[in-house]
Image 1: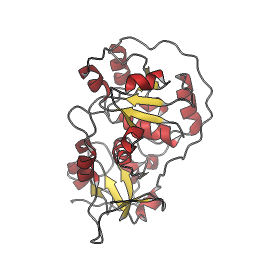
Image 2: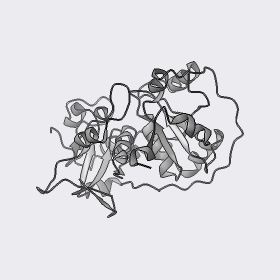
Image 3: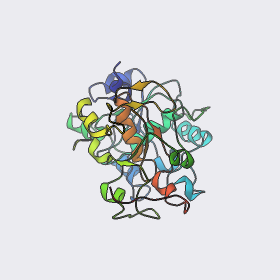
Image 4: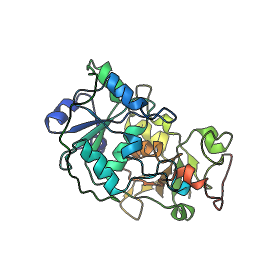
Length: 295
């Protein structure tokens, strides 16, 4: 199995995946929308067999500390309860999907992998399904028998704010360029970016149809310039296997959602980066943290 096929499933591959027991989750969500907007779109039309996964209720922990950001990670018990209510069987694979412009599937993919589950993202999501002639079904998903899950988290690398401050690799900020430069800040406490970060906007990583570009195009979009004049190298955080491209990689966004979408793209190239979950919302909430502006 190629690296890309380990993280993505195509529309043509989905029927076989479903017949093999894959559990299909619709995780449509957009920043700034009413909480139930994604579920309403699910009710209006979703892929046959899908269940709705609520990003705010299941994939986001309680908002108890601004330094943890706007979308803190859930603990194992919260995640197990939310997935268990959907009847998720931990020994079976999961396929998640959203729609172009929504980065929720990346968040779901990352959080479920962080909890040790096998999960892939449907490349192109709802739009790719309907473009291929697939029909949508409306209404609520059929009732399922809840499952009792026992999950452990921490299966993927993350960084704390102190670790980000001391990080000596490549730190990627995936927000829009104007937010990175500090020209505007519509959501978080202060404008700017973490000193030393480079900007690779997540929106560039997906085409107009919500499909992941080719590996060659992805490399052009994601690979940072070498910092020492050598051939660029992306390394596994924590001293793991070096991958052709000289630096460890960490990623952040506004609150830890769209950064996961970039990490999905990197994973398609065989690169396992570290996530800073609080992202800019957590960093900028701390008056002791330095802030940079401009390029």
